[in-house]
Image (tube, rainbow, N blue to C red; front, side):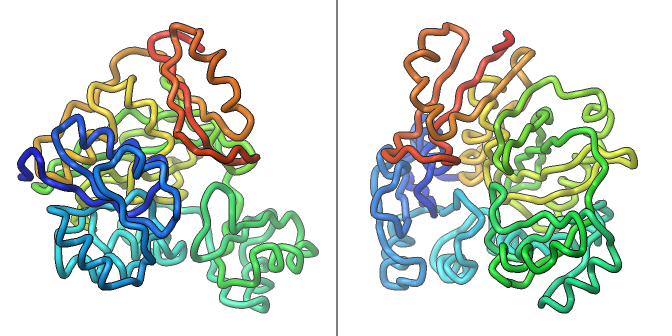
Length: 356
């Protein structure tokens, strides 16, 4: 167990790191942000900040020597970086979670091997393989890069085989995975936290709504179909966490389908669809992640009151902050990002116990 005053290193300098740093400070910990970016909104609220490349081993070693434990705020930190740091300091969760999450094909095979149900899929290592995959899975389908895709990036929709060339070009002709369309009623996520001792707790699953591939809102209570499938989805997510000997918050996204929960993807970190837990749960995802990383007892994940609605402030939405602050029901979070651009997550607002 980390004593108060210990330093927790965070790889990545975005808003998730920012909210983790705030949660760590509440529990008496200092944080040290490591990120290549010149400006880091996480560093704005942290004790220390190292701006250096992911492969700068002397700087990584110095960072590790200043930290009592290290975690990460996004899944595209290079695995080699985490392996290097693991030789100097405890990194939680470990590199194995990144290895799975960074490879969509490996992720789907891993989850299927644990009894999960991903959408039907086929590997697409090259353009010729795409035609074979389309012949097997049919259309419509979604073509996704194997690596480096999030918030709708790195993917293309194929409505007919004639769209194949354009889709292949859209994803940059990178190795990919083709997914058959899923017939589903809605999307939801299982957000869990697992401690060093293997204790596992889940928050209630929100109904997630995406617009243009970006999460727009997460709300409780979800539709009845989600409530019916929540336990089965939790069992899959828990099996993933146990198989990885995971420590911290893990998020698994699902489609509520007619045959049960269909696994979409996992994120080995705190998640946008869990931001509602800051005000809406007894213990937030950010606090419980820090508790897990520090070896502390996990907090209660119960929902405080219903309904709960979290809406992202994307692009120009951030200009509504003053208006939102005038609403006594609204809990407003501004991430402190200087540049406003379309599709960029700049904040969020949550209402608890009342409809927005």
